[in-house]
Image 1: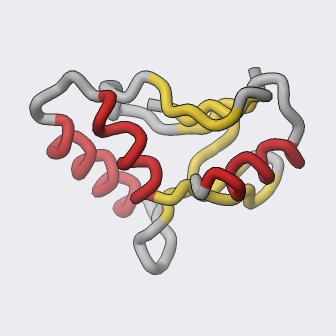
Image 2: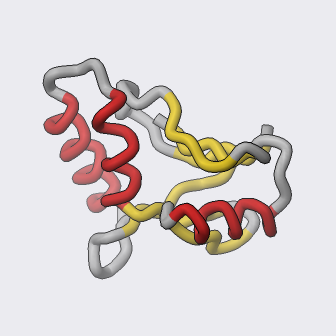
Length: 102
């Protein structure tokens, strides 16, 4: 799964692939990424390479689009892995992701 930020806004793509999570910045600069994440309630830009994504917002966009019956269990496994790696915020509401420019 990945979050795509483009001139058209914020979208969650490939929601059934819970083996990866990142942000793709498509034809937008860092200021546009920051504004799109903030304005959509999706998260915030940390620096040019990193963003924090709001887990409730991410799940709320991704889960309804899923075709997998075991999606919730896969989600929990992905978030558990992120926690083990230290990628969750202290309050557990956000996950840190890297940004790929496309």
